[in-house]
Amino acid sequence: MAVKVRIPTPLMKLTDNKSEVSAEGSTISDIFNDLEAQFSGIKDRICEENGSPRRFINIYVNEEDIRFLDGEKTAVKEGDEISIIPAIAGGTR
Image 1 (spheres, one colour):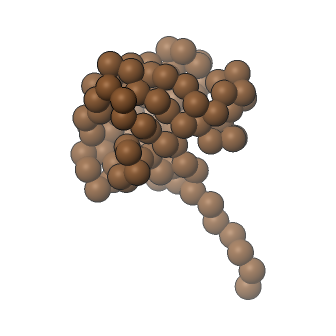
Image 2 (cartoon, one colour):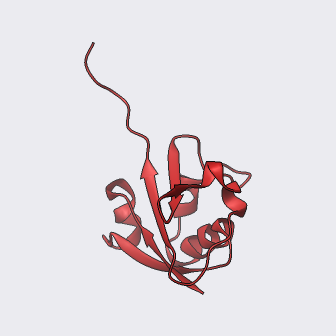
């Protein structure tokens, strides 16, 4: 089942400068594996060695944070939209 994955600007160099790509799978983990098969090196930028998302990367399925769902085991279905959003820090003192 295909889902749409929104790619943040810092990772677009790995997706041939595409801001949205399609991926197949029934869980977020499956989606990450399919992304890696399509775009070598992207999973290392998103996930820890154990497959869980890096703590500074936020993953949303249909605008719901997977940390409040089932993490990388969160189920996805045809037509879902996944957003990969790197955390932003900074500001003025």
